[in-house]
Figure 1 (cartoon, rainbow, N blue to C red):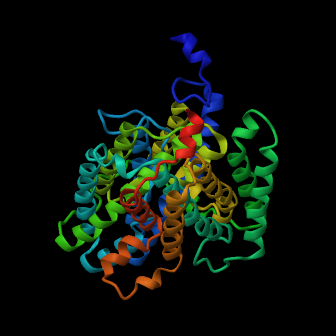
Figure 2: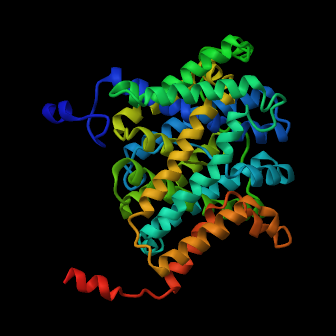
Figure 3: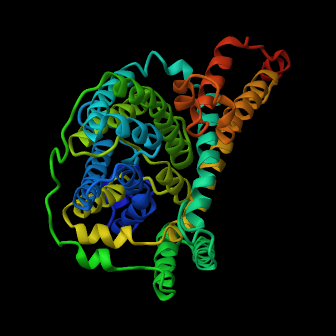
Amino acid sequence: MKKEQEKSTIYDLDGTVELKEAVPLGIQHVLAMFLGNISPLLIVAGMLDMAPELKSTLIQNAMFIAGAITLIQLYPIGKIGSKLPIVMGTSSGFIGTAKAMGALYGYGALMGACFVGGIFEMILGYFIKPLKKLFPPVVTSLVIISIGLSLLPVGINYFGGGSGAADFGSINHILVGTIVIIVIVIAKQFKGFVNNASILIGIVVGYIVAICLGMVDFTPVAQASWFALPKFMPVGMEFNMECIIAMGIMFIATTVETVGDTSGITNGGLGREATTDELQGSVLADGFGSMIASCFGVLPNTSFSQNVGLVTVTKVVNRFTIMTGAVFLILCGFCPKLSALFSVMPQSVLGGAAVIMFGSILVSGIESLKRVEFDERNSLIIALSIGLGVGIGQVPVVLAQLPSWVGNIFTQNGIIMTFVIAAVLNLILPKKKNKEKVKEEV
């Protein structure tokens, strides 16, 4: 056992590595997803005019839940969990529906819908095996590509200081984001730890530069307490059928995205396709995590594409290493001051890293697609899936005249439309045998 542990590296899925190497790389994952984890709650809570105290509690709970569910992904409970380096967090895909349903029926009804939706996603997870034929390499590769393409505008918004920021696109934000990119590119030219921790180094340098430029207000850090327990059921839970149906539709979407993220992890980090058990475990953890999250007043938890990009960039897949990041997230859930320290970081700091990470997801999808034979059939699937799927995701107004549920499903980011088109075409288009290739093999 000791010999196996000694041989384990950050590039090995299993086994332990030294804490001095694991902890910084684990925290790197936390930095990559921290703002994305709290942003959905900040947006929805702001729209619903929540009290500052309740908003702070929900952010604290979001940290705790993200860490706890990440641990389950890494070290499964039964079939719940994938045993893959998947980092969980509050999904931004639910923001639009959550704002609409929360305004109509209240936050309690929203949490009740999330709880039921989590059960629904777990049911979908149990049917992943018979549905596996919907996810051949050509389909999963296109989903990964669409995830990367859909995240590029998000990365640029971060780069400019955050969509809606009063100083969006200011010289300071552009400067900080550019410095982060330059530092990461330089760090990637080295070998060993500096290369693997390039994202962390870039973010730390960017944060220091932002502080020197007077871009950081530490007032929330000073006001935050050192210790507080996460609060169970900080808001009530009600069950409204219309709210449940609306959120349930979005859980179908997040299931597809989780399948894409899981495939992205195995393709980009492990150089192989995801197994059926891994896909099932990741979706089950998604649903289970969303159920638990709703009990703490947190929006649905799902796999974070930011961290898929990080794995693709660094190739660090060791579960023990990612586990240290999950533990750090849990500690943030018990230490509001620590959470506040990260929450005041300008979004442009993360933006510099996000541009690289999200672009890497796109590259991973392209590399995965290279394994697919580019015959006439597959070329047609690729062209239509990207053309319509990503195209409609970029111009969602084209579906404005259709029923609202259609827009809720297909115009969030283009991922679902890409999947539906690719999966349907893969099922109905006849497969042609390449006779010349057969002769060559004989």
